[in-house]
Length: 273
Image (tube, rainbow, N blue to C red; front, side, top):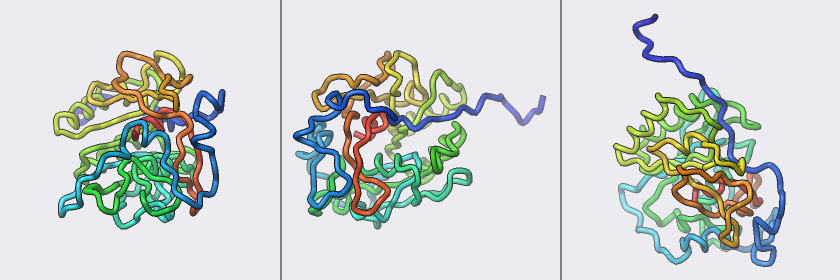
C-alpha cells in the first residue's frame, strides 16, 4: 500500500436538491399572495422572507471587514439586474467551470434567495435585503456545471475549501446524496465547525427518513422544507439530523435571464433561508 495514501473512499455523485415535479401546487404556495411569473416590473417580497422575519431586521452597516457568505452550487448569473455585482465575488472550478456562469439556474436561484437586492423597485428581495449597504459579501464557488455536470463529492469539497480560503463564515450547500457517508468528509466538516464556520445544507426531497449528506454530518446544520402554510412540504426528508425547517415550497427568486424570475421547490430553496 502506498504510504502516502491514508484511505480510499468512493467519490459519490451529488445532486442539486431541487424538486423536479410539481405534485400539488397548493401544497407549495398561496396563489393569491405570490403568483409565479417570468418577468417582474415591480418588487415583490417573497413569503419566505416574511416567514423568517427577515423583512423586519435591519442589516448591520457595511464596514471595512464584511462577513463573507459563500454559496457552493452551479454558479451564478451575476449580471442579473437584481444582483449588486460589486459585492459578489467567486472562484472557478476546474471541472464545473466559471463561477459567474450558470446554465443550470439552480445556483442563481439559491443566491437570489439570499442576496437579491431589496428596495430597488424591481423583481424580488433576498434574506439579506440590502446587500449594497449590509456588512456582508457574497462569494460563489462552483461544484456543478451545465445540466448538473461535475457534481461529485470531490467537486463539492474543493468548492467548500475555496470558501474557507476566502474567509467565509457561512457556507450554503443545496446539494446532497443518499446514504453516502464519508469519514474523510465528516472530519472536514467537523474542522470547519471547530473553526467557527457555519455550514448549512439541504436535507433532501425523497419524502423519507433517509439521511442525505453533507446535511447529516454532525458539523453541518440540516434544513428541511415547509410550505407557505408552515406545514411540512410533501417531499422533505424527516430524520433525526434535521435541525430546522424553512420555506422551500414555491420559492420565488432570480433566474438566469435578465429581469426574469422563477419559482422553485425543494430543500435546496429552504437551506438559504
